[in-house]
Image (cartoon, rainbow, N blue to C red; front, side, top):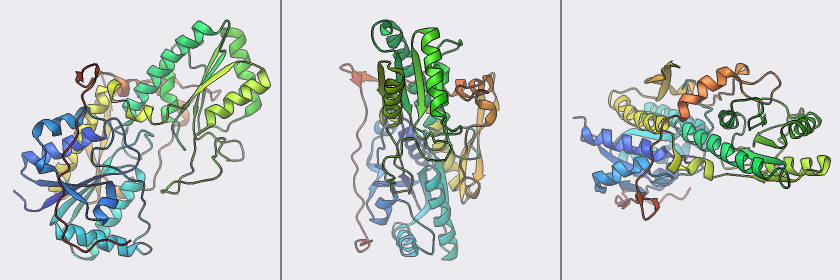
Length: 417
């Protein structure tokens, strides 16, 4: 067996299945007798040398990660800049890796995490340190390039479609004397994949959601309000799904929260549903309810897609295999080989083709009027939400696992960055 240690870390917003990927990573490494350390709170844990020994966890706990949401080892929103700007941080990271004989680094996250893994691989090569870096895909936004879909998206998409269908039945029941318009806000800063998944909730022309607003199409308020009025007149009520990242014709976010940004430099969004509800109430005089599912849509492991869980585990196992085979600066990605029956496989893709690239909704997935999805989008989305993978229950609640998090003794001076 190869000698050395594998370091695994989670990054960015967590998903219902990121721990399933962790389970796949650790289980695969154990079969190969590879020691696995995990960084607490992503890359920050690596910089702070806050590492835990996953070997101290039971096999049952590692299996249990596959049905536990959240991020078992903690995550972070902390972006390392270029090698020149943040060189001291990258060198500190390399010092920590050397100190613990880390020969394989697996970073589980989205676009920015892929970029970090790529830069770490470049620095290690510069210092002639034998390190294999693998980016492991994760994001409910489904916007990573190359891969057909992203682990985490399928379960969030299933939650979205189910929630919209159930809420629509509630609205339909009350519309005669109460709520006439319901607005559901879905995550998605630049890409409307999650909002599109809501389209699976209905099949007929008058089925909810009646209107979907995508970041890929400019928001036209007059046209939107006119369409809401027409739907209410025809159906009796209107269910709207809006991506948080919709913009007006000038490119300004409709839900720009004061122009703030997060640690990755992304616009702080949230509030588009309340904005739209206010406009409907003020301009059309209709009673409106709105909802912002926020963390609920990405943490709902109780209704996860089995397809998504299977793929999350598979990319974790493949990441270990690719790492041990020396496939440096790569990412295990999902390639669809058939729509019906749905089939897929895992392939290796260069990180440089993933990092800093963004996959938006294809034009052919958006209905001609811009307010719904096409049959092509439905063919793409439907397999991703299929299958149930319920967690075990105890006393009426999901029985999720908690890890011991046995810390590894530090070998370096404290990081003061």
